[in-house]
Image (tube, rainbow, N blue to C red; front, side, top):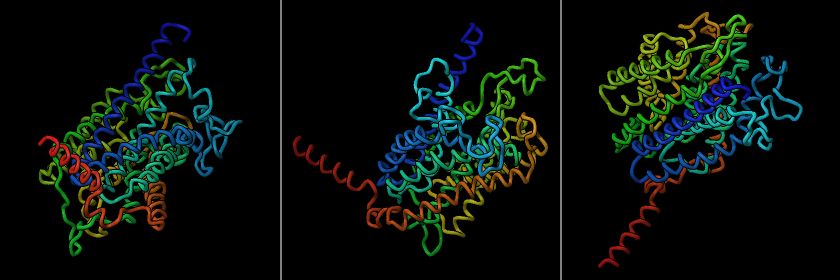
Amino acid sequence: MDNELSALVTIFTEFYYWITVVLMFLIHVGFCMYEVGVSRYKNHQHTLMKNTMLIPLVTITWFFFGWWIYWAFINGPGLGTSIISGESGMNLVADGWGANELGNPTGPAMAINMGDHISGGFWAAFLLFSWTAASIVSGAVIERIRISAFGVLAIAIGSVFWTIDASWGWHFDGWMVKVLGYHDAYASGVIHAVCGGFALGVLVVLGPRIGKFVNGIPQNIGPRNPWLVTLGLFLIYTGFWGFYAACNIPIFDAGADAGAGVTFFTATNIYVTPTTLSGITMNFLMSLAGGLLAGYVVSKGDPFWTYSSGLAGIICASAGNDLYHPLQAMIIAMVGVVIMYKLHYWVERRFKIDDAVGAVAVHGYAGVVGLLICGFVLWGYPSSMYDGYAAITPWGMLAGAIIMFGVLGFLPGYVIALILNSAGQLRIPREVEIAGQDYLAMEAAKKDEETVASAEQ
């Protein structure tokens, strides 16, 4: 840092990303509370442990290869040419670790580096996105999946498949942005659609919980704790605000590309395209409000779906919330919530899919709808400020939605679940499911209580 101004910009940006990581940690706290609020008492400890253990599994694998995937696969299957390296295949440098040296887990750039105050915070922000990806799948499969199987699935979605789609469509050099005009500023598809699709693929193989369908009619499995559901989702809203912040560069000189060569300091989105933090704040809140209102109406005041719809509303509007007017964000959120709610129950009845927390609907269906709406509302807008990139179109966004939800989401989830199931390692035994995954722990606690009570007497 050669002067006070550059030092101030660097320190501000470093602190900015540090704060986003702290806020996004609340997403994980929220998911834990939310899932416990939905699950039955006999499965609470297992539900919490599943969400806890994805942290070390995804963190370590993200360190070793997740970050490398993000930088190495920007050209996809040879469908783009990197503006970083000029290559059309894997984006590699001489040592094979990718265009960004942070992809090398044994390299000095991954340690404390006085020449780079930013990349470690950005790495951590992406790691928290990875935790979120795994947690989305976690809620859908509660009360019947083996924790070992979930560990495999968490690594797959958290450190591999969502990372591939981020490299393709959530990178300023990604081929989907260049070729398809794919635009997904706050991850309607890149996180949510891909994880919803992955969860659906797993659920098709995993099957419903015992007692969920009686004579083909879906039953409400409870009890649910509305207090924990409410608190959990409000924490997710709060963390999602940090998620939005982490998808931006807070202060950047875009003059070379967007300012006709004149110094032009601005916030940018993930594609390094100018936006304003003020505008996205309004759009975030209006999409939250629209989602809550629509969810309350369409579910006839059901607390679970009202709170979930607030999240779905944000997700639906997220693809274009760097460019939408606040009224557009609100209306798009409302439309997405009604569609995802109706589609959830239609799929449940038609295909006997037991999604315990509505994760496929809230994240997957809302994310896909958000991508499709974005293609029409922003039709003709530039997907990026870089010259030569395709403009946003409905067909480009449709192709992106298919890739996210289907190719990188549903298909891998289905195949991995099928392999685990064929090995007898996907689902817990019937007797364990009936007794509850916490049965042994609860019995041990009873014995402890009896021993203490006997000693007290």
